[in-house]
Length: 411
Image (tube, rainbow, N blue to C red; front, side, top):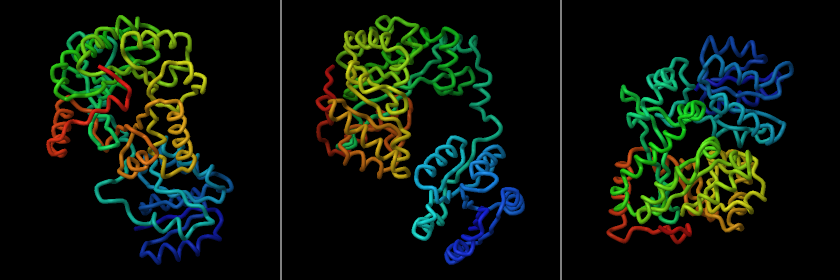
């Protein structure tokens, strides 16, 4: 592996050179960003060791350059400034699509750096997003209000389901429904790429109703799955523009006896218009559904909001889960959220769980439910059916796990 080290102070060069070459890697030193750019152009390194505290420019300028030029070069940050600055720099880099292999304090150089010099597992290369749109991106470019209206009318809004599992035994006990838009050419568009257009063009009402009709049409396939709950999302604009009772009532009524309905609203929606959401929350509960705050920890909801709103479930934002082993601050906030939820008697679901280590720590912290790629990606209902069938086989014929008592829900 060829390793490039950028630092305007050469005092660390000899120490790093010995450490790196002792591991059998090539080593090159640059004392300026200009020299670094020249070195990368001449021979692309496998890893960049980057000091944040450059004199004339900062290490963040290098991150901007890597992102702007779309150079897929993993970075290890070196700094003597402490964990706070390293954590902040890591978040900035991730937001630009730059892979951060690790954070190393100069005071702990030998112990912290050595594990990071091993190459990542084969089959998991880091890539910056392509500069050219792929097929799905081209579909997004073609999407406009007229096309969206036509696809809604033609039944192009499809429900995808992501499992929510019990951390007690790993069995799926619920699902979150995520909208997808099927274009005429058969390609699919994620919700994030058409929901804003639906909201801006006044199509959110027919789109939401179309999605709920598709869910209702699948209810006979839901019955044998014995799901305890099914979660749907309502955005702030949806709540502001629609009669919540009118939209939600058919779904809750039709699924009664099949599974309990949970309505997820984002923490940002809570902060935007508290009176409006309080009214909507009361209507949701009167319809027989439960209210969950989605992406908790990323907005600005106060403790008073948690006490005043009829919330029964918190969904912890995936960013805290993804950073739990990388940032002591993220771990501390995550544990604080879990403790707060437990003390308020709320049920909690961790989002974005991708590794067994994350799952195990969350379970040991007392969390009951989780969702993420570790358990299953969003997909058509058939994928959930296969997953549940497999979980029942692995249970050697035992009764399906019932999480309704844990959630405090009824059908």
